[in-house]
Length: 226
Image: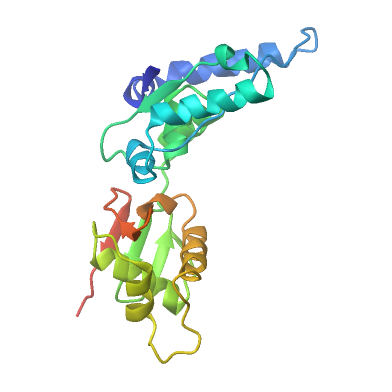
């Protein structure tokens, strides 16, 4: 597989953006007929996520090519795979990093807009422990009490895999009739991730283990203030 490095495109994003705008004008010109010659599927799965699931990125590529061959014999040979690299701690959603590193026009336009706009709103996730609230890009995520406690417990045990049973026992009172079981805890995690859209990756699913919170440069935890 080829390798695309995010840094290369960040350092030259302005000329690239102008180039893509020119291409758009040419493609959208009524004088030019166009046809679909293929498509790009950006997969935002990092190495660790693949390993946690018991596979590698290379195996995933081979499996996708195998599916293509099953649907259209020989189509697997008409594919090209490239791995997107980014500096450790660069932050952001995996799929956005992949799109930018692999030169997706819309992703590059968004990168230019973010660079050129002086936004007073703090990007990322802010976990305000004293006010028991979570802000996502400056907006209140409106977490329920239990959703906040779930996130807070995972943060307190950063880097450790917490089993579903432990989450149920420590976040919910064992006498609470509304307490979920080991399986329905996944529903609560899914709702929590939905409210921090764009930063879902901070809560990792560990296959056969449970869940884990990993440190993230765009996630800030504000301690209690007295």
